[in-house]
Length: 91
Image 1 (tube, one colour):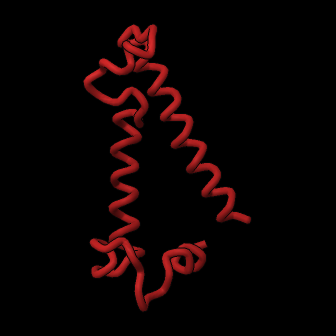
Image 2 (tube, one colour):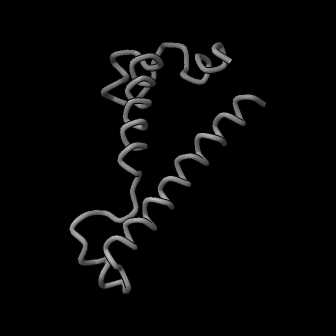
């Protein structure tokens, strides 16, 4: 149950931040039409800079601590304890 709440809380933080940052970008760039969106040089829907940095750090930590070196590049876990088992041990 604790794991479910932690995951739900993290997802809520991530989604809320994307929504808030997207709204901020739309207001800042005075977006009024779909064509305005299409002509933007960068994505409007994204994490805020602060959360993007935290998300990057979290991913680096997870890859360093929960995936074996061979899987870090291939994005597969083979012959080791699955990351979910690591998380369950911590909780």
